[in-house]
Image (spheres, rainbow, N blue to C red):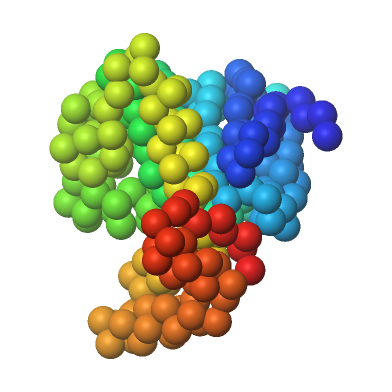
Length: 257
């Protein structure tokens, strides 16, 4: 299907979502939200896709929701905020998602990256949530996901000051997982994602579920969830294939069953 705000390609077991932007007004933001929702629904049901890359979030430069004329009533603005999330469709994916950050990423673009599982950034990248400078706060998951990722103290500092940090600081606090030279950037992203996609798709989903859901549980409840998911894996064909491949010293061919 053709989209106006993004491109989508599937190669082997990796799906790549590329935002083509620029997304700099409410009309484009709403269209991107709708298209991401539709695309991610399709990816969820595509058993061939085991991991996803999201790139181009640097092209999102409209961090707050306004009417298309720049002015909106309070009721209209609240309705717009409710239905224009671009982070939520990505966050709902049960497959590993890697954000490819190749430049400065601010506002809602960073909120989109925060909804991904792993963030790889080029060495020239800068990151921030500068909403407070306009008397606003992040609204597409930024206050919740940033604090869970880097801790309450640093999240408060970044959001309350509107600070823009360089990629070295982002790496130090755990906001990005890896810094890559620009010349090696996309190949590194693709290689890491393909490596994950070569693993069993059920195990990938269960590992992600155990980590995310476990964060909202007590340690005892989290350990029980982990054990339940581990036992479920033993009933799959992929588990049998993994054991047999290990014994025969060959690469396993997982089928997601």
